[in-house]
Length: 241
Ligand SMILES: Nc1ncnc2c1ncn2[C@@H]1O[C@H](COP(=O)(O)OP(=O)(O)O)[C@@H](O)[C@H]1O
Ligand SMILES: [Mg+2]
Image (cartoon, rainbow, N blue to C red):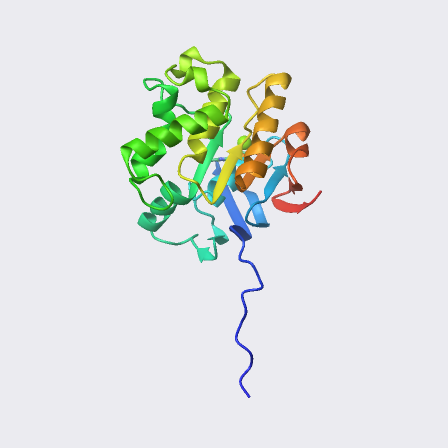
C-alpha cells in the first residue's frame, strides 16, 4: 500500500531562520555577531525580538529582510530558501513581499506624505499584491494615511511632520503593497515615551485589524511587551523569553 499523501496540515512559516551566522572583521579580529540564530514567524503573528544594544538585532533583521546575506544558515520566506538565491530574485521579493520601518523613518524629504506612502507601489508596478493602477495606488495611499490618523496631513512634507507622524507615514508606506511581513527595527527608538506608546498601539491595531504579520526588533521592553510573542537575542542566538 502507498503511504498517504502529505497533507497540508503543517502550515509553512511566513519567515524562517535556520542556524544563521554572521561575522564581521574588526581589525585583524573576526567577531561573531550571529552564532546560529533560529526563528519562525507564522502568518498573522506579531513577534518581537528583544535584545540589548549591540546584541545583533539589526544585523539579524537585515539578513531576515534580504538586505544582507548570512555567512552560514538559511533564510526562508514562505518556504523558499533565499540565503544564497540570486540577487534578482531577492530584489523582486523585497519589493513585493516585505517592508521595513526604521528608527529614523527614511522618508524622502522632497515628497509629500502621500507620495512617500505610494512610492513602494510605484516601484512594484502591480507585481505581487501591490495596487495596479495609479488611481488605485493613490486611493490606497489615502486610505492608509487615514488609517494611521493622518487624514489632514497627506500633502505635508516630512519636515512639516512630528517624529510620531513621520513614523505613521512610514508604517502606512510599509503596508502599501500588502507585504507578507512588516519588519520594524527600533520603530519607537527616536520617540518620547508617550508618542512611542501611540505607535505601539498603532502596530497592535495593524496586526489585529489588517492581519498584518509583524516582526519587531527592539531594546525597549515597552515595545516588545505589546507583541503577542517575544523572544530574546543574546550571545548571537535567539531564545525564549
Ligand atoms: N557592517 C559592520 N561591520 C562591522 N561590525 C558590524 C557591522 N554591523 C554591525 N556590526 C557589529 O555587530 C554588532 C551588532 O550590531 P547590531 O546588529 O547593529 O546590534 P543591535 O541592532 O542589536 O544594536 C555590534 O558590535 C556592531 O558593532
Ligand atoms: Mg540596531
